[in-house]
Length: 179
Image: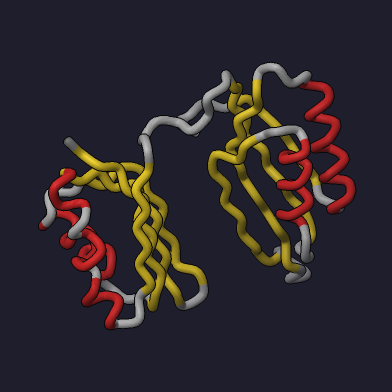
């Protein structure tokens, strides 16, 4: 029997941190499935789905005590299933958002999606500088699961309105789980 566990770790970025985390997991016969890792400012963040033998799942937390002592925050949460969380039939779409950076963009877009019962499966945001002016530019790419019962024109209209309120361009295209 195996347990599925979501592991998140944040702390100072340094060479070898991914090797150390995966070494701990290997030592407990745990397998890394889906994961995301990023350097954010001077901090490093990992979130991953780990599958571990049921008899060692309870040992995972204490296995990271050394990293906690170095200032890392480690959280583990057992999940009911590695399968998709969506119980209802849904279609996947990619949503891309672009515009001048300002507060509230992610909130406005996510609120527009939530109002229609649309789940964000994954999202990434970034801020870059415009080539000539250096103006901060915001970008977001999200994978969303739209319940098949929703009328496409209604939820697309809601998303367009959210983009207009946030003063950003929003484009939507069909996607697959691999996107």
